[in-house]
Amino acid sequence: MVERLQHLDLMTINAGLATKEKWQRVAYKGGSEPGVLNLTTFLIDEEGNQYTVVVTVNNAKKALDEAKIMETHQAMLTYL
Image (cartoon, rainbow, N blue to C red):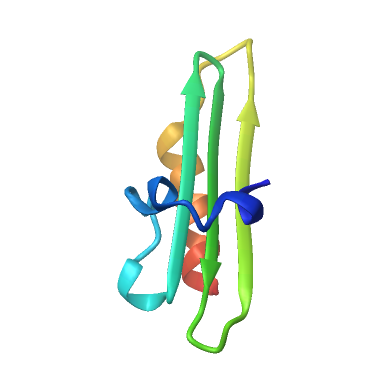
């Protein structure tokens, strides 16, 4: 879905955990509610390659380790 929306200016206001300077285009949408966290990042590199990185965690029984979840998402972005 983010691939179809990435062209909208509102998708580029917040780059999330991506470094804008590294990418030709960054589109980000995140969201949360108790027990749920989502981080979705669409990227286009200088060669035109496209990547979508999504991390979604659900756990209604205990608090999410949001720092660990964001660290995991950041690690995937850095790897690219």
